[in-house]
Length: 148
Image (cartoon, helix red, strand yellow):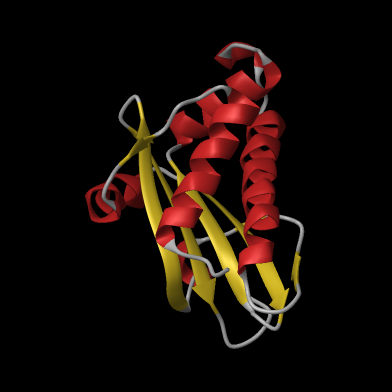
């Protein structure tokens, strides 16, 4: 098997649905880029092994709050910044864990880490976009020259 946009799309949608009870709608990545430029939570998971790369998950701050509320069965005022960061990180880590078997050879996934847009250079292998109540999510898998 290999990683394709269709497979990545199914993995991401399944994780958000089964883990958070949230149903994402497909959306063109180009439509979402501008909306994420100003207000986003960016998390990355390094992939290493025969395939060296980086899984990058970018979503709006509002969507990260919705995800955390679903994960912790809590409302916005009851959530702390750590809850939100942990939720976004865990979802990115689950996604990376699910795509490892679709990468060549054996692959290891690092712990998730916050990223800025300058840390996301590489060749795009697969990229998918979604919305939830109009809030954007983009997940990208990049091939890098070294372990991410």
